[in-house]
Amino acid sequence: MDGGVYFGRLSRVVEALRRFAGKTVEFDPIRRLVNWGRLYSLWPVHVTTSCCSVALGAGMGARFDYERFGVLPFGSLRQNDLIIIEGTLTYKFAKRIRRIYDQMPEPKYVIAIGACALSGGIFRDAYSIVKDVSKVVPVDVFVPGCPPRPEALGRAVMLLQEKIRRSKVSGEPIETPIVVR
Amino acid sequence: MEAGRLDQVVEKEIYVSVGPQHSGAGHFRMVLKLDGDIIVDVIPDPGFVHRSVEKIAENMLYVQIVPLVEKVTHVDASNLAMGYVRAVEELSGIQVPERAKYLRTIACELSRITSHLYFFGIFGIFLNHSTMFMWSFGDRDLFLDLTQLLTGTRIAHSYILAGGVRHDMPQDFPDKAMKVLDYFERKLEDYYKIFMLNPVMIERTRGVGVLSREDAIRLGATGPVLRASGVRYDTRKDDPYAAYDKIDFEIPVYKEGDSYARVMVRFREMQESVKIIRQALRDMPEGPVRPKRMVPRWPVKKGEHYARVEAARGELGYYIISDGKAKPYRLKMSSPSFRNLLILKHLLRGETLADMPAIYMSLDYWAPEADR
Image (tube, rainbow over all chains, first blue to last red; front, side, top):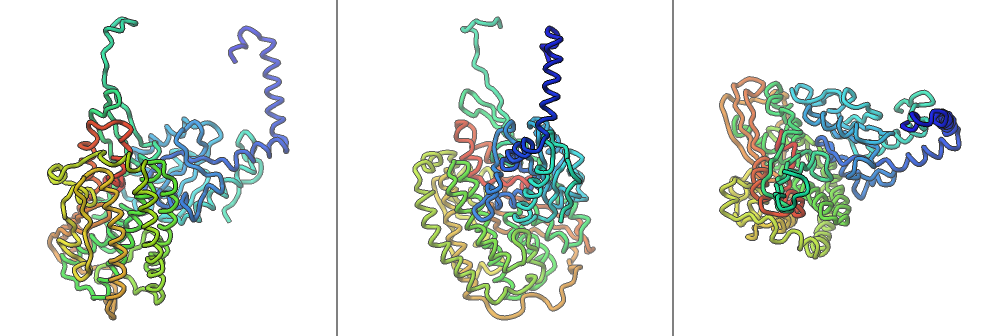
């Protein structure tokens, strides 16, 4: 805090208040309220890394309609909290993805879809791709498939919501990590 | 220059980077050199989805390459596979049963319709026309259901293989297809009223990004972009494959060469595709659809061959060099999207920044196909 240089005592009080507030928000009613707010406003970044964007496009369409879960692609990075990595990530794109991820405000989540994002898929022998997306950005949910069906992507969003429901306001998980059933 | 001297301020050109994180630019980046609102120059920066398909193909069996080339344009999978399989078949003289040819035609045309519907949805989003996005993506799912019924999967179906197709169509496929086609033909009239006659759509695309006939030929345009500039050229007519030589259909050609004409060509192509599927279902002969034993190692002869097909985005060519072994020596793809990228540079010069989406999107640029 800048004020700390001039108002030493006051800053200590403010710090104590912040610590108190930090602990208070983790109590159940407040934590649930904050998490509830986060659950249904997962706005993904408008970035398409590869061809699995077809599955995402179908999911945004009339039949599957992820807007039911509050997933609405949005242009501005400052208001996004979700990156959906669709398929192969090339080295050229990996730099941009990391930059996009760093620009997003906390808390932020990543869903990686497609076999290519998990292990390279059919392009595993290629010289220009990142075989494991989690080396670039921390991934919350992986969806296998080449390409995955839109239903699978909808399920990934639901799993992510489950994860948010079971995490602290600060973003740490409070219970055992969920297992994909 | 000192600060505050207005008479010394020189209006300079500025550079604006568009993409890859941009609502709609997709996996593509271009740097626009702007003078005020006018685009002076364009520096395209492709290669975000370069996955070295041609190099991987050299280490794969011929049959394994079919799903590989389909990944290049996921929305248009059957046409991509058709071109590759055509090259292999013509190189080694593999005969295809008559019924398989018709099934291939149906798969290719279903693929073309889904691809064009995808284009209409994205183009609608670009022009802030959400209705078009919802309608076309909703109707696209009907065609994906048909594709699933025919081939087994929604998008990446390795249906077309050398020597025929993977399996015959299910018995209830013609009835269901006819139902969807009847519905879709009625729906296309609504598309025309809601989207093509929309004042906003007409204002933003008519007379924007005009590509003359001479320029289209000189720059090597292909597919709907070429046909919107008044050139009657379609591989399905000029170099027929599958069962296209036995089917009666028209090639929509428009003379205007603007964005509106390019969208209109795709709209008319969907109508023609419906006609083609109808005829193929009606005229399809009985018989086998593939050789009795499908071997994983295709008998490809030594030599080299170039074959082309009409994919949804234009003429797609494959050049295969085979040394008679199980894997190709070299596989070269000539993709329509990359050819149309050259035109983007020509079209955007002199247009305003606000017209950029309408021009860029009307080329139906599919980055993974261009980068490969």
